[in-house]
Length: 130
Image 1 (cartoon, rainbow, N blue to C red):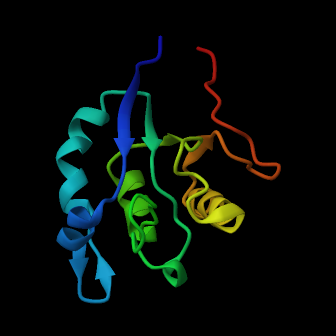
Image 2: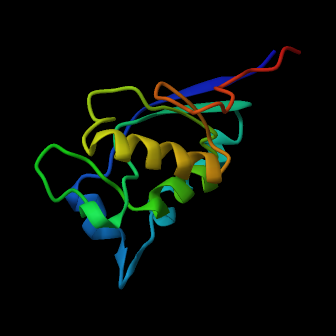
Image 3: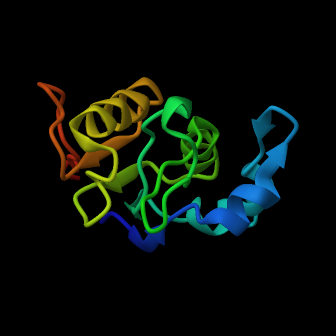
């Protein structure tokens, strides 16, 4: 039997972005690492991604209620043990199709499985049977 944990919305609002700023980069590990031990108890951890990884050129959360996060957030998501994300939500198109495509690319490059938005031929979240 597999243990699956579901997490609520993962979003990077302006206060979190400000707290993570470390010069020219961002450190979200400090915020996520307290979860690592608990998440390690699960075989699959699924989070609801309520932001995009559209890239620095769009600015990070420069528009109200439109979310674009630094790629370091995706790295911290993976580092703390979240291995699957749902991406279909009211924010997935905050930065258009280009933002969706880049978000998918970032997640694929980090080997984070995901479902919800187009994955251009990659496999979606799959659970192997026991």
